[in-house]
Amino acid sequence: MASHIGKLPIEIPAGVEVTINGQEFAAKGAKGSDSYTIPEGVTAKVEGNEIIVTANDDLRPTRAKHGLARSIVASMVKGVHDGYSKSLDIVGTGYRAQMKGKGIEFSLGYSHTITVNPPEGITLELPNPNQVIVKGTDKQAVGQVAANIRKLRAPEPYKGKGIKYSDEVIRRKAGKAGK
Image 1: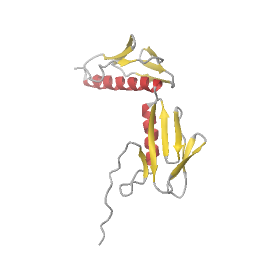
Image 2: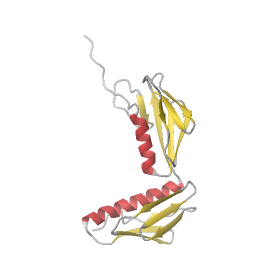
Image 3: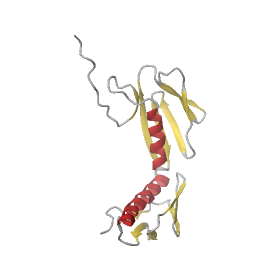
């Protein structure tokens, strides 16, 4: 039994250059470049304009790594070609953000402002003071930076104030009942 995800081929879009050197996988595209070390027991090869990831044996840990490696390689190929982005909304009276160099300074109702500087390979955009867009080629890094920003003031269930993902729905609670 092979991994259902692992056995799917990965199509290489036009403009993406893929190199496989032993266990080292590298992808280079319009948005940037990325590399990944494929785990032991899993191999990848390029056939035509597709990447085929195969497991060397049928042991359970190898099958798990097979699917993982295929997913990561597919994410890298998509990332260097299209890039990834996450959009966050800032909800609440007086809550806002402003650019400070490459980073963003948040005013979130605390006694101080919070400055977030993006790691290398990640860009932060501010289309308006109540929206932040995190962009980059690494899916995991984009998600992590967005999660760290959201964590600064997570949305609360009573008024919905805080930083939330644009597609996130906040489950609201009723306030305390009157007399």
